[in-house]
Image 1 (cartoon, rainbow, N blue to C red):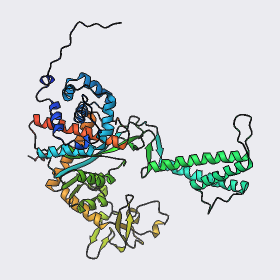
Image 2: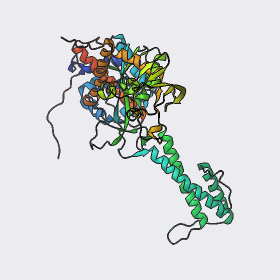
Image 3: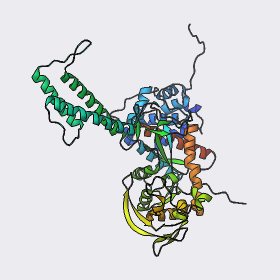
Image 4: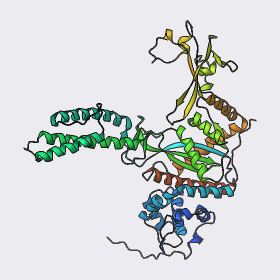
Length: 530
């Protein structure tokens, strides 16, 4: 079948006349032209004529993200069909999908934070961001990796221990059979196994034994020992490699080794299934995403310090007020913020539960006991005194040393012991147990000061704006911009894709505020009671 058309295609000589004056594509063009792209251009050895420049490619990928287009092939099609993309190309032929993908992963992937900092600088000069209050939160976005390609650190460690026992028995059998001396102190390593393999091959060479393969062939004991040794070496190398890839994580995906299996909010099977994902962190100021980072951690506690470090390294203005939810509260985070001369507005992780009746009536909680600062002791519900016993240092998983003060008292014959002392896994009988309190004085002081700031009028205003601004940014990039699953593999590529979406979100936000005459707004005001 042939397709015939008698209509003649006529395009205007100047495409700019067909793009409206208030179209967001003009804002993209203006923003990128104002940026210092020297770091991006430095990734090219040469730029060919009659091909899209790095600045034009940056405009294209940002405008594509603004229109919910994330695939390089879809961007290529849009460049050939959409007049707005043609406007950005300025008459240059549309780049193919390989060029676009290479630009994102190789060239833009070398300096995504620099590009983000350039946009923040422009927004700061426009007066659109305050450079004073930063709202931080995180969300989990699924990786492009397959769902059932998980490697669990616990399972690998368990199998490695079982394999080590088999290897030890095998080495001892070979020592007896071939008169070798390999094992020392009943410990066998990969290096030991390779040494034994080398000695077995030497015995084979000296004896002139030839290996046989196939059906009907009988293998010698030496051949069986060498083949089993090869299998054990291969399996040990596999387990060591998997543990090295896991690092401090508990899992990773075989098809995207940087992705960690996390519990997602979108649970189609309704069974709490874990999926390979990344923890995307946003720092939002005046509704603009001023910083973004990618982490392996399923929780947010250990992401705050590296996030603030990265932001301070690239941005030219320091933030005074750090506003975050209860997931970021830790003594290490409090101390880091204090040492940087910043102010923490972090909700205590017991903020909501402390309002309940059950919490207030729990006599075993330290918060419900009276404290005498002069004598440094607590008085329990029964009037007995818990005195300071000693001070010890405890290291967290992140390597931070906490100073813990231990208080204890005599609970013999106390009628409230069963309600006061918790924990059913203790081997000591309840009659012999005494109440023990582990208190970090620095943590408690920081929590009280932070709670006082949060409950002040300004703190309440910041807390309300955090829920509007940073959580609103995640709602927009997921629902409106379609970022529910990444298109690229690897932490570096995922960060680049996240920053492209953040740049697109900022331009859409600025366009929205300009058209509704809301520019310069930094914080929403609290509703006043009538």
